[in-house]
Length: 107
Length: 107
DNA sequence: TGAATAGATAGCTGTTTAGTTATGAGTCGT
DNA sequence: ACGACTCATAACTAAACAGCTATCTATTCA
Image (cartoon, rainbow over all chains, first blue to last red; front, side):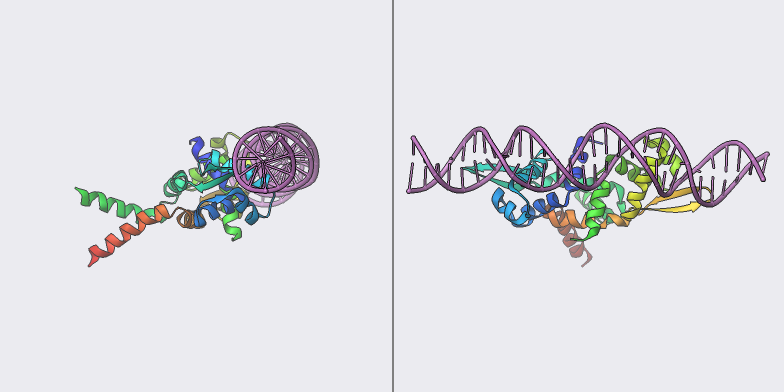
């Protein structure tokens, strides 16, 4: 459907980009140079990848002095989670059941 | 990490491929021509996409006479679900909370 | 002010990829 | 056996893309 799905899926299809996002998710805020050191590719390449991730809403950059600190925006994974739920009802059958249960309990 | 992640992510990054997979998930088994009619692209293009999905384990094809019936293999979404859970602790938390709740209720 | 540093942008290049048409390999109906 | 049909494969093309180097802007520090 939306451009959202497309952007998120496309952004995460590249292994390098996924590794960048993983690092941000697991280790928290990082500067571009820190990410570059770990990525094993040039700084411009990293900046470009971060641009793609940013445009998809998966990360955001806070500028501080001459460095930019990037942070993972994990909520942006929502379309992906939602989609996998709709497709493989299987997994999240367990989750859905619990949600139903919660709903019933609320009443 | 694994080639699994890579293949699944890469396969699902293409919108056309995602639509094919969606159709198979939501409507069940389909022949190539049925999928072609809905896809709006040539039959060879569809076959190629199905090949990519098949190599990633996301679909399987059963041959019957001169047609091939494709089926979605939703379990192949496992790496994706697993990954999103590891990344977005967020979702996990919700799931864990509910699991805790269930456990408490069982007692 | 001037040198150095951090990051973004521009421009280029080789490779991948999604689509096309043409054709090949099986299978069905007559 | 033969023509029609279903699907897969081959060969090609145009566009997208990930990487690079060079450079520009902005900031810090001497």
